[in-house]
Length: 151
Image 1: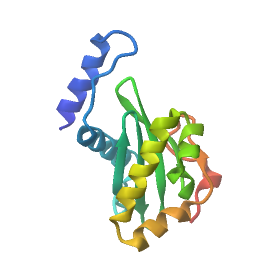
Image 2: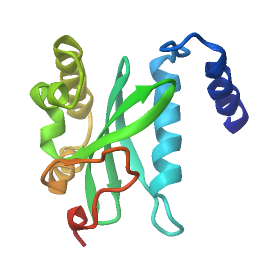
Image 3: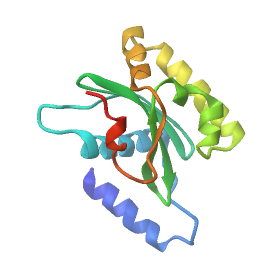
């Protein structure tokens, strides 16, 4: 799988500026899962990711790791997914997704898709996503600032 992803990333260098290889939602979910797992998993501290909801170049992911949980908002730029923000319930709202850069219609579709996906999960799991608290914008950094971590 890594070889395929590396090949796809390298092929984007040959596309005209601004173009990227189209990813299916399943391919995007796989790339997002790989990014988040490789960034945040540590021995003895696995990362549970569900749901991963993709709408075009935007995605919201529910995550649980140990006693911490929340949601992450990601964007695809030039064929690469990056973490834009982490938070709790704010990342279910179209207005928040729009403020983070999604166009109005796309933000609405993503928020509706997140609501549908989370409705199929155990309500206790979904309730944990709210515990992250305040929205933390990442500014391209892989982790929230230390003050955002609660232990």
